[in-house]
Image (tube, rainbow, N blue to C red; front, side, top):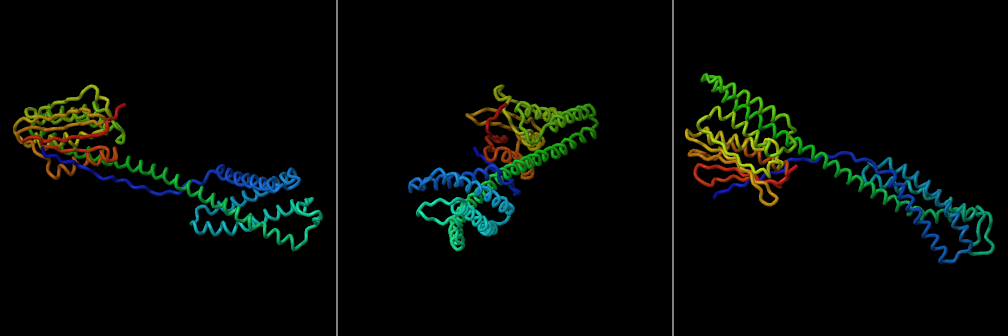
Length: 376
C-alpha cells in the first residue's frame, strides 16, 4: 500500500531582548562571602603562626574587613554602571577602578595595625609613629594583594552577570518563541476559514440560481452555526475531539444540501476518545478535500469516514473518502489543505505529530493524523 508521510519544518524565530540586571542580593552575598573567606584564611594563618594577642588582632581584622566591604560595595556600584558595555570595556574599567579601592583598603589595614595602638608582633621595639617611607612601601605592598582580591571578586561578579544574562535571554527567547508559535497557529487556523467560505458561497450561489430556496435557507442557517462555533474558540487552544468532529458533521450537513443523493457519512468515535485534545478545525481541510476531490468529481455515491483510535500513547485520526471516482487531491488542493494541516501539527506538537496519506485501494484516498494522545 503506497504511503506518503508529510513532514514539516519549524517556523519560529527567537528575538533578542535586554536582560534584567543581576539581583542585588546575589551581589551582596558574594561580597560578604569573599570577605568572610578572607577573615577565615587570615585568622587561620595567624593561629598557625601563633601570633600573640589573637583576640585583638581578630577584632581589628573585623573592622578592616567591614570597611573593606563598604569599599567593595562602592566598587560594585561603580562597575555596575557599565554592565551593558562590551566585555572588553568592562574588564578595562574594572581593572582601573580596582586600583584606588585596593589602595584605600591597604591604607585602612596599615592604619589599624601600624598606627592605631600598634602591636609588636615580631620585635619588642616597634615604633609607635609610622615612618613616611615605610607607610608608602607597606601600603603599596598591601594594595597589591588587595588589588588581586578585588579583581577576583570582580571576575566572579562578571561571571554572575553573564550567567544572569544567559538565563534571562533563555527565558525571553522561550517567551518570544511561544508568542511566535501562537501567532503561527492563528495564521494557519485562519487560512482555513476563507477557503471554506469561498467553497460554501459557491454552493449557496448554485442553490439560489436553481431556485432551491429551502435548501439555500437551510445551508445559510448551518453556515451561521458553523462559523459561530468555529470562530468563538481561541485558535491556539486545543478542543475535545468530539467537539471537532461535531463541527465537521455540521460542515458535512452543509455539503449534504448540495449533494443529497451522493454523500454518505460514517463517524466512528469511541467514547473513551471523546475527550482527547486536538487542534481546533484540524480536520476541516481534510473533510473539505474529501468533498472537493471525492464527492464533487463523481456522479456516484461517495462515503466519507471519520474514525479515531488509540495505539499506546498515540491518537490516530482517519479521514477517508471512498467512491468509484475518489481521487487523490490535486497539487493545488494539497498545497492549500494538506500542507496547512501538516504545518499546524508541526507548530502545535513540534515534530511529535505526523500526517500520512494512503491509497489502500482503487477509488479510496485516506489521510491519517498521528499525534500525542492528550485529554482533559
